Image (cartoon, rainbow, N blue to C red; front, side, top):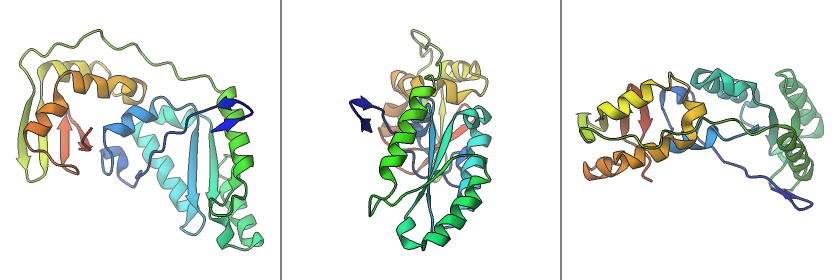
Length: 216
């Protein structure tokens, strides 16, 4: 977005569904983007049980890393052009009880978008960037990367060096995610997956964690 010469970047993270924290519907891109976000914007469809959707999102984010819920957030209630003003007011009041500002918008008509952009910019400016740990200079692969088929559409990546490296993160993936993708590439994980014929949508297990494979 841009407002009077000031810019901020939006990272679109679609597909956070029930079970997302266990890897359903997610690829490594989720890890790369979520760690660098200062603010979380929840875009909810007014016609598709927005309160239920919001609670599912929060539940999955909490299961993934509770620290992410402490980051400032806004709710954008989209497609309000489909409802009457009274219905919109009721939905806004319902969602407001969840503790975050709720801004009704319509991507179709443009209603509320300027207000949303202004609110986002203010929140981004008021929120410091998350501190990310510095990556190790190099993670050497002692025995290469082995890709083992477990069953149809499910593979396991085995690499002693990678497993040791990930174990040191002690589950704080959101804080380290900014460079995890780079580490995986550097260790040849993506190249090994492609060489083994792993296809988009297959499940890949790395050091006890599951990801849906999305080719880079």
